[in-house]
Length: 257
Ligand code: PEP
Image 1 (cartoon, rainbow, N blue to C red):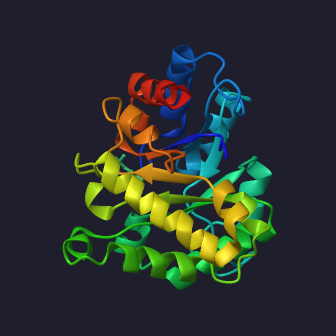
Image 2: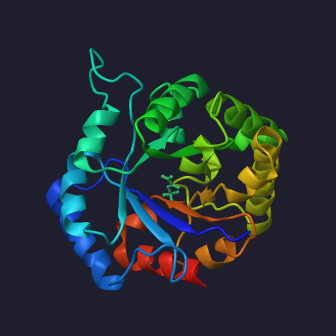
Image 3: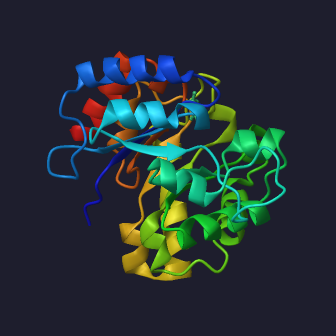
């Protein structure tokens, strides 16, 4: 089955609102008619920090989709520092990023909180990119598939096959994020194939074939084409290179081939 590729940029804690506007202008100059669905090229999505979302939406128009880097499960209340689905929807956000390894590593995100955030997002009609991935030590110990299975089963707990149409999985080996180390094409493909087969077990073959699985971890202009050519890699979640318009545009172009 052919899945429309998705190229997503995670800006992390970078780009003030005014800087973000300038970055989107530069990106638009690199690929003037960017967001299509499928026939001409990949879907393009960016995750700016909360304070830059409005500026990005205004500058991007229909050129790309905009997501938020997190979302809380409660609709409102005493959750200092968190953000609700209603706040994001009113801004015009269409996606949320859930369970990024930096959230897991530095902010105590667990499979349980990933699952709670995911249910809240889906209930509110937001699409979600759910991140999973093993650490370097887990890979060395041969535990990669075991970690992926655990994160996937619990992160997706009680999510229906119908709701999975709104979910994208990002496979991000922790050791490759922001390090300049990238999984080889073959290792990335093997992890993606494992994730898809597990989705098949959980949701059936047709659902598994339809879910997009992105690779993340030092994807850049030089390695994107090889990774994106793998049969189970449906796009990329890109950190550092998404802040460089020429590099991000070249990854988008690689996804068109
Ligand atoms: C990320 O933040 O999800 C990521 C993959 O970062 P980088 O591309 O910089 O490794």
